[in-house]
Length: 119
Image (cartoon, rainbow, N blue to C red; front, top):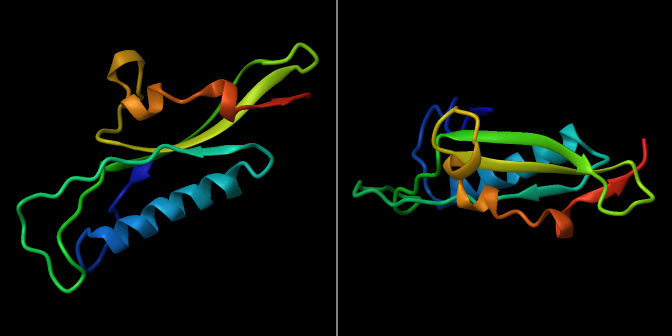
């Protein structure tokens, strides 16, 4: 977990900055777990009533970026387990659980995205 806008010294959150943040999170997940499939949950974006600047309107994403590595029993019997790396944004640093988790996180199609693996 880390802060979405931590270290932002100048400027403001806008589409250009947020697109870069989303791509950077996906790349970070791929570097952290290069052997496993990566799924990025598309973050929600809010448009508060604040004046923007030269880069367009203010656009804000959830405050926390997260990367998790998940594994479960194998989808196919010939493998030991199924694995998936997930990158997502969330409002607070609390660990997501059950109905409190973002719908995009809860709605991940494990069967389509995870990869079976032997250890």
